[in-house]
Length: 374
Image 1: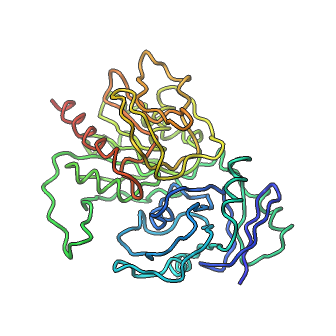
Image 2 (image 1 turned 135 degrees about the vertical axis):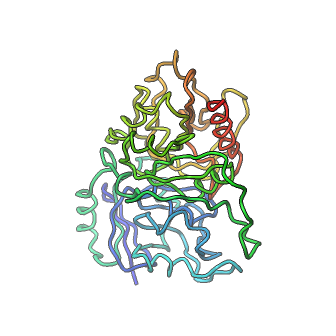
């Protein structure tokens, strides 16, 4: 069965249909991770995007419930060179194509992903349509051109939880049949869900926090009524500029409670501090991006997934310290306020998938809470 990936500029790739027989639209981006495809597919930050994986052989170890970062795949589609028909792992419960089909997500393989990635690097991320339903190239290119742009879209409120809930699950030990008991939480953190990943919640619990997750549009008063020791701002998809409700909430919370933001949360903090954000040419998506900690001069290899960035020149450096910088393109990767208990990073210290170099930041957040509480 054939499938087609058509880009808005007229470039077309034909290949083999995998996953669900479907037609989906999205911004086409590439991720350079060698593994962790299930975590990538189920990361809500990929809502509105079709993901191209640069590693040529994907699906080798199948899928399982533990490795999902949310309740379902949020990527609009998957593009790979070859999707393995064999899932060889003692942890596997379902092959990748069947996992995608279960949730209605299409995939395509047997295409030249090297040529596709070079095209995206040269021309930038662009709108596309992935279809195994309509195989007319001209119609699909027209559909891609007519699909919504990522710029100006509030996707965070679309992927956010609809209700408040508690989270107390720590990081799992896959070699144990039963989870080890967790010590009682020392602090209560309220986490804004703009598309939060399960592993962020687990890492907060590992650091000694009980977590209450709230919808993206939760008011400041409702958050403070929960008597948090700290507030966390999550990752999420789309453009931070239309999230005025989130910016206003953070501005109201600043100085009243310690705040830690990751990815979209970092961008929201940047805008709350008076800064601007802008769209990157093809974004940062992968598990091997080098970031320099400007305060320690140490390099961290980081997991990243974002298409927008904070403009450091738009921040008031009399109030804000720039703490991390991307060594590939010198974009801003972290900041902290000089007088208020507030910091953020653009990358993903929870990894999943990716290296654990930056995992110390969860401990840094807890230390900030301790100092704030005296």
